Image 1 (tube, rainbow, N blue to C red):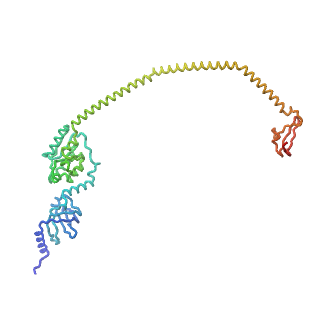
Image 2: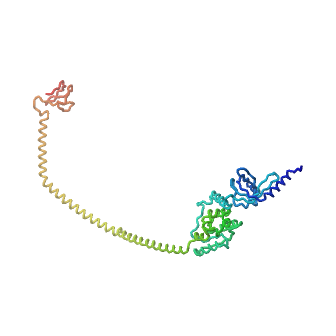
Image 3: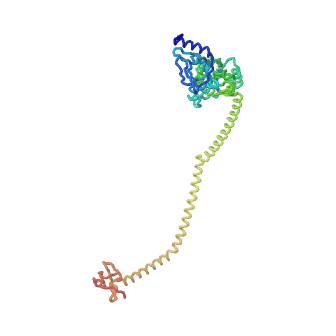
Length: 416
């Protein structure tokens, strides 16, 4: 019997596995993902019945366009290898692609969701572009058609403009870093606007503008930034983060620069409007001045003195008329009084004489001392004269004749 050591057995198994499975494509679901400090990624690939360990070393992991996440279904391009120290086999992953979806499309959605959650796309943080920029920076390829399109539009629309061009790579692995460095440098130069852009292309060609480093540079820039990448149908991460998204590079210049011809027309319109407003104001001021002159004449010292004179004259006339009327009225009243006075005096004297005679007769008829009729006496109670009908049984009273007063008491009372 030939006996093998554990190491020898594992070595033979390793050789057999790596020779037999030097290139495999395996589909499964990601689980137990570990991002090691070394840059390696360790994870498990599983389906409903089995699982296998996987490793993706730093060199291959750095080329990933998307982030591995728990539960993702992926297709792995790799090879089987045996870790002799533990006698366990695993897949050495060269490439990982999302199952049923492109890696770039998934990476785009992942970054978009991440930056949106961090507030990179919120309208409140977007800066306002100046209406009349004086100095702008164009970050693009100096040899690309996009630059010529932007310069042509700028020259046609608004020549009162200083333009600086920052030549950068706009595609390839180094493009993102080139764009980021240009944005950071231009942001220190006090430009009114920075335009970052390039012409159209495939998603791979435009991918630099989907990199997180470019999004960070745009987000943290103090200068307003316009993203003008690709065609109208292309939407890049830079479009969402920038302060303004333009569908094409040439459209960006149309959006941020005023049209000189429109400005001339606007100035003509403003000039005409100014003269109209000025003419209206002068007309109103002229009317106000006429009104003030008329008001001054109406309220001047001479006018007021004249009005006071007229008022005094009217009062004098009214006073004379009133006095004359009073004198005439009183004269008539005096004449009537003179005519009626003798008759009134005679009537008053006659009336007084008649009243005096009547009073004398009443005095003679009511005074006790003047009464001579036998059997009559004046009845009083508590020194007050009363009728005999007012007395009640048991009351005391006085009966007074011409020469005597008798105190008495009612013993009985009856009508006759």
